[in-house]
Image (cartoon, rainbow, N blue to C red):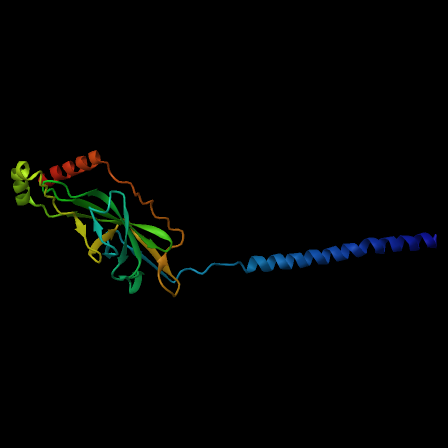
Length: 228
């Protein structure tokens, strides 16, 4: 009978020992879990936030010359921001930032004194790895040669078809333009230089050009609107 009691005591001890260890493990896990909950990782908020409003002027300089003689509709060209854009005492768009434009219409110089024509659009800034849409259009027309045309027509049957051409539309490299931001541009900074706000996704910039028919229709509607 004593043997049975002793054996029972040993069995009870063997059973209770792992229970005590398991309780300790559970307590340790609770402490670890509590520590994680009490010390979450929180991202530091930007120290500075600002908005560059739509229609803010952006001064641009053309990097290379354009000509209706050499360029065609759909050609892209490069520009550079000529002056820092300052917002709340910080540089929002730094001088030297690259910008891209598009030749939206080009017609070379023709016979009988017709001048070349070219229209270009300012499309976007390359800022913070994003294309920030711009707004602005510039039109250039070459100088015609009406007097020369008349002389050529009158003399054509005599001197074998002399042809006088008008001049091409040329835009010299280094020419300055003023474009504007198409939409509001949110910025942030955490002690350093201003950057495009994280998560901001600008609208897609279209690089499509008009057909000749679409262009004529637009210009006709614009002319009608200006006349009132």
